[in-house]
Length: 345
Image 1 (cartoon, rainbow, N blue to C red):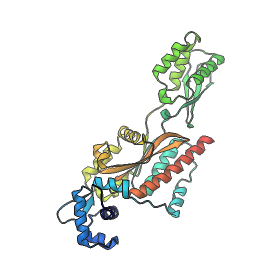
Image 2 (cartoon, rainbow, N blue to C red; image 1 turned 90 degrees about the horizontal axis):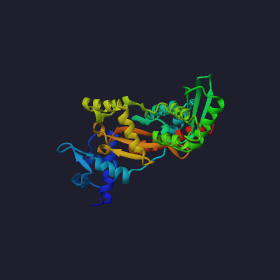
Image 3 (tube, rainbow, N blue to C red; image 1 turned 90 degrees about the vertical axis):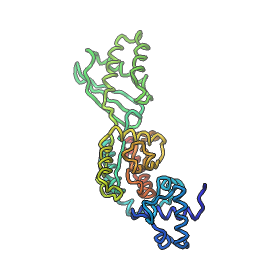
Image 4 (cartoon, rainbow, N blue to C red; image 1 turned 120 degrees about the vertical axis):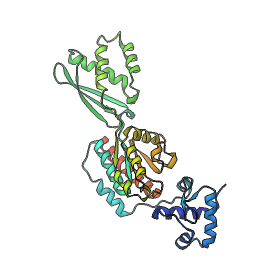
């Protein structure tokens, strides 16, 4: 059943008021504050219909109404109005971002703090994933007869370096020949496609052409044993304590327990980022049961056209969706600009 324009106006007013106050909303409040030119009795009847349709809930008899998950979803998809950030808010963001950091992980960590400070909610950011980048170049610099510095560069500007033990006494000419072969074979492949299977295929392909293929494969294994943990940066975890929705200590404990589970959070952000667009995940749409009284707004950040990580803002289902979405969009643009500037340099 589609909602009439009047029901939409009343639903929007109830949700807007509840986001502001965290208190059940009555018909007199809507009549007094939202200029709908309707009597409290008419508004009350419409609110009763909205409750029957599942868009509103009543905590107890004679109380005002609060939005249901269905109500929030309809609001986000069809009713929400966006406002641009003010000049002061934009200036504040620029001030918070006026930093001299050049390391990507530190910039992302700083972004988590900036975003939580502005939204007053909890921020989760999935750190840059080297596996999402494509192999660009492997360089090797012998340090002595048994050690070498290996530098891996990707198309998104990641630079990983590691000192490795050389497989055997290799001449400089042999080392450079190995590296040239691997660069030619792997260029353009995403890091997560450089698997053991591919390495075996390379061995079979070259076994009759390169008598030191074992050394090449060992060198590749060494070079790609960099840390690949999916790091999640948190900001403003204590902001949860300021939300009237979470006065129950047991609810807070469950949320904090989840925030300590980096594997859970990285999976949540990875799943949310597959759509490659802003997403609003409400209540039970979240796959982690312990935080299903929350909502999560996510976006992805990029280097060039390649997505390398994702941003999330976690708050109560009563969160100020339109404001948070606008802020996340602005912060994402700032982060993309900084990362792309670093990559170009």
